[in-house]
Image 1 (spheres, rainbow, N blue to C red):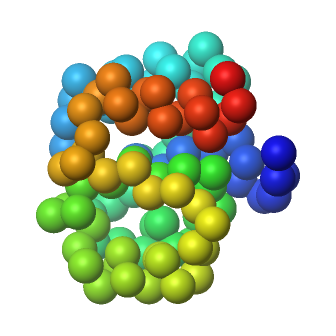
Image 2 (image 1 turned 135 degrees about the vertical axis):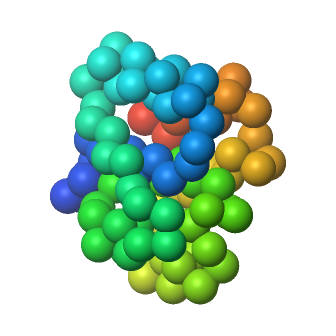
Length: 97
């Protein structure tokens, strides 16, 4: 597995408290960190992470377009397209669990 600065960090930019709490628990179980990004900020560009969980409507298309160009190898899991269960399953796959 590729290791880099931020290989223990998830960035979360969404407004789903149920998912947020599930991710906090997932991080505790898997010894990972979670950073809560601000809407329309460059947090996902400035902070290294192994995955981003984001709502497309909150993050904004400009930030997402820049993010894809800068960190194209970092998976972005969109809350608009995936259920809580699917997001947690994808995170398990990403960390090789």
